[in-house]
Length: 313
Image 1 (cartoon, rainbow, N blue to C red):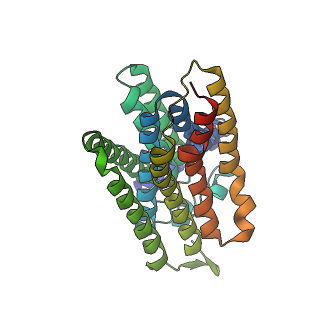
Image 2: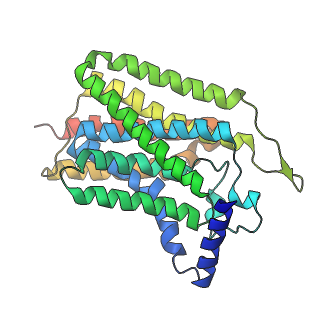
Image 3: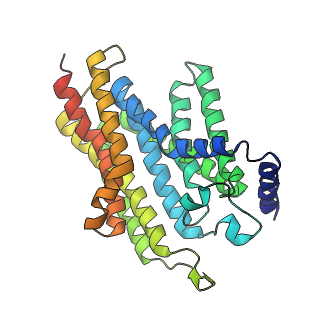
């Protein structure tokens, strides 16, 4: 139970320091699954189309791997395993479902790692900053008491594996571009298989004080959302390369940067508000899928149409 003892040590540190670092750790945790995701969007729209697509594909692969892993292991959260664990602040409200591996870490890792792979050789500082960002994300999940060390370590390793796998696929496509559609279909089949797995597998049905510890429905919803993210990239990529074929605006194009800024505002609205709009019209799992699908479909296919039409050279 060294993992629990480590979390208790961090908890004692929090209490001894009057939760001095808690706001920072909460911010790092939220940043990793919200604002950090704007970086690949900026890469894709403004700097380098391939690099942005690489980062977003890595993220999609990582999220699907996270969904399958959580549904397979079904590990309970630290405070369920040991009542002495008291999560900090409001973190317990957002830490729903199973614990292993960390979804926050598996969201942040492919973004940080892909940026380090793409630009670290040009500027070593980028690698160090990405490493620091990943370390702080993992530490924040332990510090807040919502994940064990193994949750974040394995999450980081799986996120790095997602980047490695994506790099191999992209290198293969550089030599065999005609195979891209086949790989897109393969990716979509993996998404279908993940949804089927989520719906058909059995789940632990443990109760405490008459209340189900983890509702399988919430885990299905999370997996639908992860599949939605990856599907948005895959379908968006197919349509963009077939019908749009846009070029990034560049960083010296004021009009292009302005159009991209408007797009980022819309992207943030989709990320934060869109699901609330559609939730009342469909089942929760479908609303989660659609909200996440639209988010990446907007980035990969829809807004590039606007960029191409308004930034013609």
